[in-house]
Image (cartoon, rainbow, N blue to C red; front, side, top):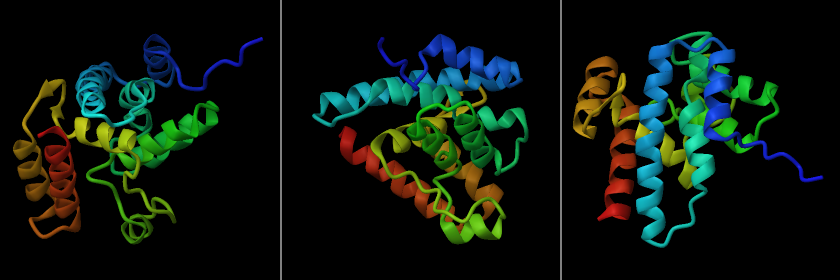
Length: 177
């Protein structure tokens, strides 16, 4: 008997979000992020990079699952716990944990009482979902500059997260140019 993949298909991801009580507007946001993430993954793969598109799409759909509990900065870590509780692929849990802002360093995570580990996106799939999330406001596609302006207003222009966001944008600009 074939082992069931712990990376759910799109329909199953949507059912998981509903079962966890994620609000409809957050689900619409996740659907838009997944479309942008799929497009990014496809373009990056055409450039010769190895990208797990199924993982990217599932990660994008589930990235805000923690918003079923809270809408604050801890939603990523809480979402990672939900993914693990459901015994889904660990790579999904890492995508969910690492999509917040441009990622969160261990020091910042400890100060925020989120985690004792680094929450910076490392893999290409983690970076794609994190970046795609920054190209969506609600369920509307936005350009990266709008998102950067929002984070600068929210966190302050000198916050270390701003530099990480700029580096993430630079990373994708180089790959896709």
